[in-house]
Length: 231
Ligand SMILES: NC(=O)c1ccc[n+]([C@@H]2O[C@H](COP(=O)([O-])OP(=O)(O)OC[C@H]3O[C@@H](n4cnc5c(N)ncnc54)[C@H](O)[C@@H]3O)[C@@H](O)[C@H]2O)c1
Image (cartoon, rainbow, N blue to C red; front, side):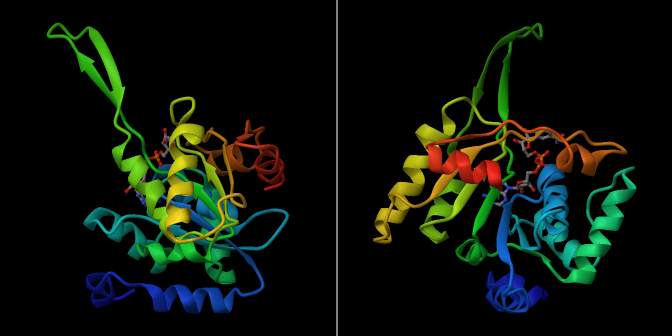
């Protein structure tokens, strides 16, 4: 991705080329290339049971563009004591099944979307430091879900891994996706949606803590739960 492309805010050509090269694979798009999402993208690109084409997407901010450029230039942006990170990154580069981008166009290619963005809790502290209360600011999370709904396939599977308050999939994600699909004149009963909170444990077994560990999951309906279990 060149600087010019970044300034144009389009990475469509790279995404199309990547999809063409990986045309025999299902596509996973991972939203958020932070501490969790970046490593999740390696786990998906080295999945044990199936070969996937994996696109990690982050925002076009200076910090995130640095991460995106690093991944596409062969430098993994997360420092870890887990040797498997380097091994998995090299393997994905060799296979050519991992791309990083800032372009929302990527969502239109996804069979699966994994949400690994931040949702921050704001503490309200008293003058003496005691906790008065806390709040969750949902606006940017809601906006991220709108972006998915504006671009995704009507039968996509969306798996939220971000730590969210109970009820968020049902009361925020689902209506947002339905509303955006309706605006595009698409059916609203075919997408699958669920939650599986991320349990990563950074350290020497970082990859294993994602790949070889029990997971809890749920779906907004039976079809979603079944497909999420399989995935
Ligand atoms: N870090 C951990 O050890 C850990 C462990 C378990 C669970 N979690 C949960 O995983 C989630 C992610 O954590 P993290 O540590 O990776 O956070 P992080 O802040 O390191 O990364 C989040 C990334 O998401 C990106 N992002 C935000 N909005 C976006 C959007 N609309 N589109 C694309 N990218 C967007 C940000 O730019 C950032 O790069 C959080 O909900 C956290 O609670 C984290």
